[in-house]
Image (cartoon, rainbow, N blue to C red; front, side, top):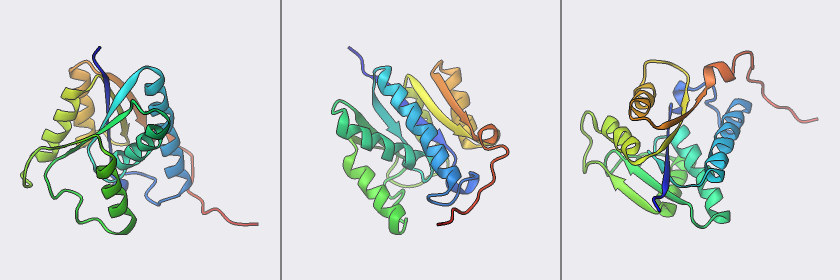
Length: 178
């Protein structure tokens, strides 16, 4: 029986309204991702493919890794646009990146070195491997929107979280202690 495969796409933190770790909006977005990933598992998906970019890719990978503890059949495949991608990250971002690589069932490198178009090639490779896509989008003209467009053209089951709509009217507030 063929394994059911889902991939992720989404903006990097600087393009999201939830840029701060632990902010209310970041936690909301992660809960949306958690629910989508949980639903995939309930629908029989066992292979999750992520592109290792900061933001949505890494958040989704972390959630998948948490499910791997409870569901041993789940696999995380990471697709890197080139070998040194992510190696320049600092502190918690670097730890998260290295931990994700360690826990990946497989790592696919698109290229030895960076070249113009390697990110797009990574995204297309992930789509070509997948049956479903979970996308997080805010704006229409981006690599994320191109990836979602390609997935829809290929007929993938698309589950899109439009955070422009989801976060309308929510102001980011700093929590305080009583």
